[in-house]
Image: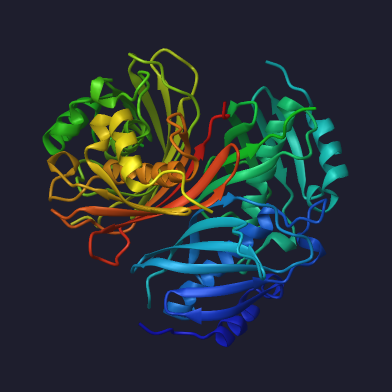
Length: 140
Length: 140
Length: 140
Length: 140
């Protein structure tokens, strides 16, 4: 099993397709059925008390799953999330980036399913656990 | 069963606590165990093609659940989402506001569970279905 | 929108296809995009203390969703559950049947999504809330 | 971090508390925050075609999570599932046992969250992925 895109290609593709979102994220590692994505935490992701908001963590889970999927099937902009389930387990620390570690559990013709563990950089504690299903459009 | 806060109080509370998020939302209706919340769609919520992004719909689901909960228990800023599950069913139409209709199914001492149906204003089609669990901090 | 099967046809079909499961269930009502299914509670569904087990409520949610789906598309035995999310909210009362009220939120060509509220017969309290996604096999 | 119960104690406890369910399951391995549970597949778990039913896999996920939790906190019979989310990815093979590999991601005072990967014995393919939340009753 090999990757269709590497981290640099994924970053370039996402910056071209979703510039306003992608500037806050970096694909850091791609491997068969795996990808790690960093979220560069800025003021706009924070809630009172300095914690990262739930929707920001949802966005990281969604993008990490998108990265692992495109890393396998190549640049398919129209893959869309059909289901997301997320458990929020611990408060993120203020002022530290988040890392979303995604793995694909099934890559079918029309559906891909995987999960993502979100941690603060350099910490083992899982802050959130997400599972995501993407629908893959028919190939031309 | 009566409400602890009405729509105007909820809007004022959320604007005071989360100004950068709350300006995009309006609590429109509060009833026992129910609330409707409008999302004022702007450029920053859109993806290419003019559709509203998944994280934006997640945010609406989260806020609608927060509104129905606070409408029952009053202004408890520290209630936090512990689980969210969302099915994305149809693409939103560009340029129309979204309405999230939330209902509480259980209001316990420490956990509240409800669900939210998200539609375009004036349409019956459900765009997304979310269930949400909130943890309620111990009262003083 | 009309139904492809009524309650009697659904009961006959499920009894023919899944006799060991179906004998504990009765489709009681079918309407466009809706179905109510009764679970006849017996000893084998109970946990210590007389409460109905989680897996039994899962089975009811799954069958109620199957009933509402087949009520719309007709007898497609190979429709399979791809995702289930269930919140357990209250303990069922011992010795009373359960009713699962299912509604379809989306009936697509390949996927159907709906949710189910489970209550004790004659009670308004929701015991469990389930959302279910079914994959529909390609029609011949 | 050490375990409060080993596999033999867990099997004895579950057989005493839930004899009609536990006879189909064996806790095979317990480690800090981890447990593997075998489901002994019999006729009553099968659907037409010889595949294991969704509710049977749900039961395995639920029991594997219960085992990993009690392996950490000891014999607390009243821990109850509050949320379960399960993705069904592939059809199980007929006539082979299932193994549920559970890990705890958070063990709090009142809530425990983990996930379970279900495979056929001797296979790497994930058949189902479940996340589970348990509520832990207050200790005496």
